[in-house]
Image (cartoon, rainbow, N blue to C red; front, side, top):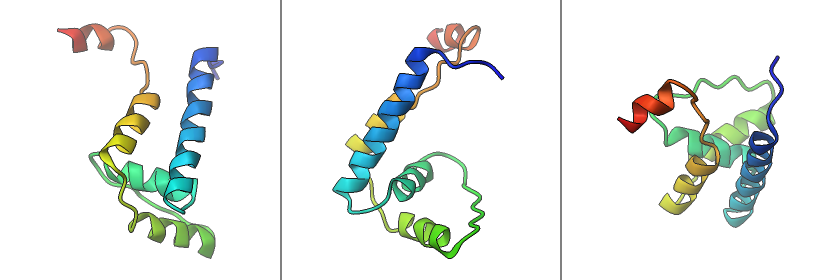
Length: 92
């Protein structure tokens, strides 16, 4: 397994803290905010709760509405560096 670079680790820590901040603003959990944010993406999410609590979080996520500012910020801080040649192709 590759070691993560320091910048990526810091990015993940910031993303986690921002997710928790958004959860606090919405009187929700960070897991529900993450699921609600994931629902704004193309595609679909397959869930597999192991506990009733996890199922309740998934259900709660369907009732959350993230602001465009929250979505944009979570998108920005969670962006993955695609590296070569993808970055080059995206510039053209």
